[in-house]
Image 1 (cartoon, rainbow, N blue to C red):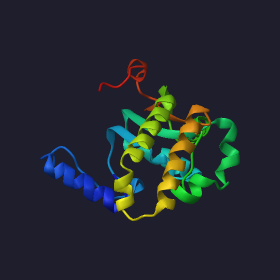
Image 2 (image 1 turned 180 degrees about the horizontal axis):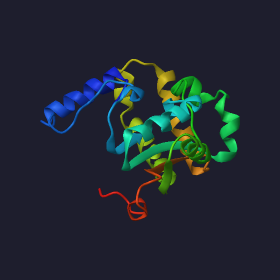
Image 3 (image 1 turned 30 degrees about the vertical axis):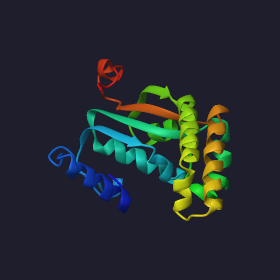
Image 4 (image 1 turned 90 degrees about the vertical axis):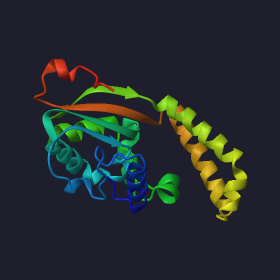
Length: 202
């Protein structure tokens, strides 16, 4: 599911090209309008666009969509707990220039919201923030290696410098543990303990 027309068109085309229409349904639709129940939900770095005011709605909706024995996997870029309240309403380079309207939740805020409006509970967590710092290094190196291609887009030197700054800025934030990237498994409260403690099969 996505509310990006470009993303929807790209993914729908790829699904058609791979002949997977019988296995994959792509929807250009707000997640709050999804109906039915599912045994697994996966949300990958989408919650950052939901906003802190909508966290409760997000988790209540996900719980409603999940079967009693289902699993929800959330990949999310987080900010450290100490900085969360201060940054909710503050402005910075990322919010002004890269992701207008975006926000980073803290782990504490995620747990507090999910447990206050639903029976979703964290049963597994992996912190991959250090790996994300390496990813940003590789993105920056790749951007530099293809500088001529960037120039050919005629977006101007200011644009290229801004993205270089963005990649460096985020790399430093991950290395300093100011932000991180978490993969969190939530299960419904009634899920059998033996299933809740097991990692989902890949």
